[in-house]
Amino acid sequence: MHAEHSPAPSALLINGTVGVGKTSVAEGVGDLLTDAGIPNAVIDLDWLRQSWPTPSGDRFNFGMMLRNLHSIAGNYLAAGAVRLVLAGVIETPEERKSCSEALGVELSVGRLHADVPVVHQRLMRRHENEPETLRWHLARAGELAALLDQAAVDDFTVDATTRPVGEVAADVTRKAGWL
Image (cartoon, rainbow, N blue to C red; front, top):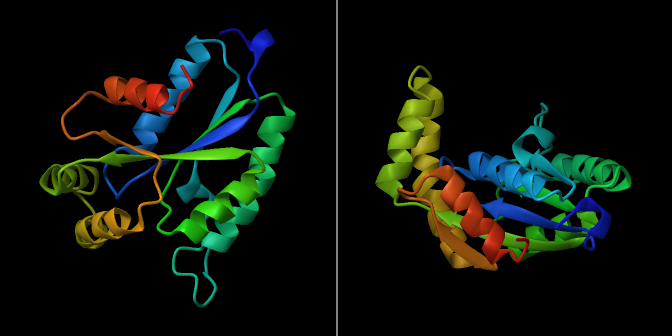
């Protein structure tokens, strides 16, 4: 597919617990789209929520993320992107709806899954010199995986336990119907 035959704009949120590989896979999906000549943008939602202090009752600064997502998505779409690849976490159907509204385009959600012991190993490597951060992420990994199992906000799931990032990204892209 070439850019001059661009499809209608849409977005894909790569969901999953901490340490499962959302950002790496989103970057891989962006690379596949670029190689196919499809205008795209990759957005890590964690960066859009980074501010302090967070409002009372908004533990993960979701409201700030939505405001920033609305602006950034609009900028990318106006510049010609037809695929928005998001890496982040949504825990409820309401959060999914809010993200879709902020984007202003159709949103699909694909969840990455990996066995919790594998996720813990990844987190230990990522935060080896940050004991407090590691402790929080190790506790959050299992908690969030269970929340996501119950929430069922995803359109599809891809196993990311032992497969290379490029293979997982290709699987995500296929399941999203993008390539």
